[in-house]
Length: 123
Image (spheres, rainbow, N blue to C red):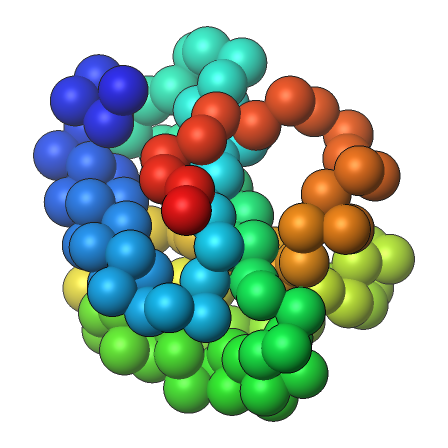
């Protein structure tokens, strides 16, 4: 699944997957957007849904900016209130520019979704 992505995107996705798999607070990592709809190219962003154990949701939400900073050279990040999605963290990594959206939810919140995501890992 990840092997069809451009190198920069694949490397980031693989790193994110490994990092989240080692964190027992994380239930699943899902991918959406052009990853599942097709048309993915070197200019596409990465859309991820991070499914969190409800016991740790508030903790992780409070730390999500710091978490994003551990994923690479974070140039800027901001939350998605302006698009009506406060659970969303919109990130720009560099020096080779990569736009990554991280949406943090619990398993219960997954019932309300706009697309059927791809499962990158789940417990």
